Image (cartoon, rainbow, N blue to C red; front, top):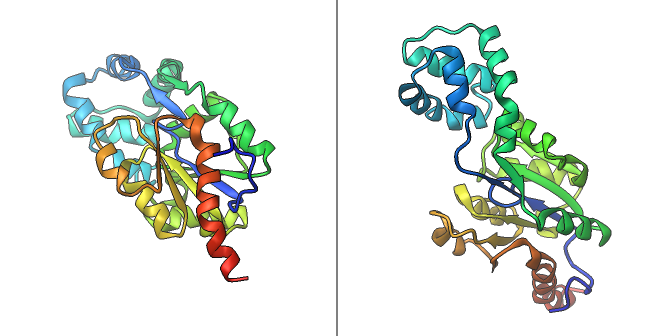
Length: 242
């Protein structure tokens, strides 16, 4: 492989966010501190909050304030929207501090943009995950951002990927998808014609994700070479149809 010097047959790259470009540190104090402020029993409230994960990611529950309100009600505690909003605002910096950008992310994103590739983010994410994305300064690196809570679709539904490719003005077959493979996101990307690159973080879902990947990498640094390899694999087929 040539380190990203070959002419790529790909015009766009779509990235997952969490466990791909960004990592979560253990011991996030946000939930403990919010529970204390609102008079919630953490051990009872947090499972109820976690149970609303998918509904919040797909926008059925319209954000973190409503998610906290609903989960508090489940445990028999009444909170006001103003009090919840104030608690979220007060402690949100501690949530942001629990996330870090992978040290290989920004060099990779800059390199791909310099090569003329269009970049999209495709993330199963709620409103507060999008806030974290912005606080970490990542938006400027992407031509398109697609968050599930905005488009009301979760990966691996094809619509979330097609939303990104439509905004990029590209076909699925002219794009690659890079992610850690959770929620069968690579299978979903394959379903709309994308090449798939797994960043194997040795997580619980990694074994099943390998079967959905065209190339498996240990880290982000190998993505340019992987795009070269995938392009080289396609080029004879493209030439044959000319």
